[in-house]
Length: 58
Image 1 (cartoon, rainbow, N blue to C red):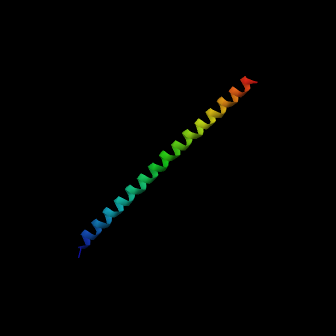
Image 2 (cartoon, rainbow, N blue to C red):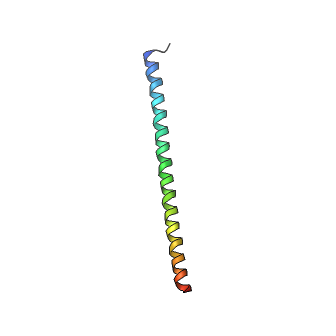
Image 3 (cartoon, one colour):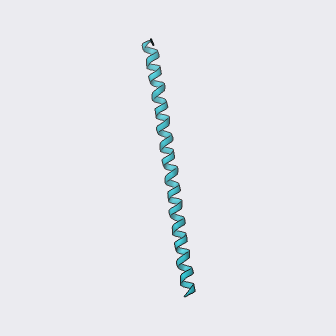
């Protein structure tokens, strides 16, 4: 059986690990959001190029 201090230390370690997981998830979300925004910009660029190419062809 753990002493009260050891039990508290174990609980603290678990909470620290949970906090790290949450931070990692938040970082992943930020990275994913940046990737989505980059794709949105690429789509807008491609659409703009297509419109310009289409207007020059006519």
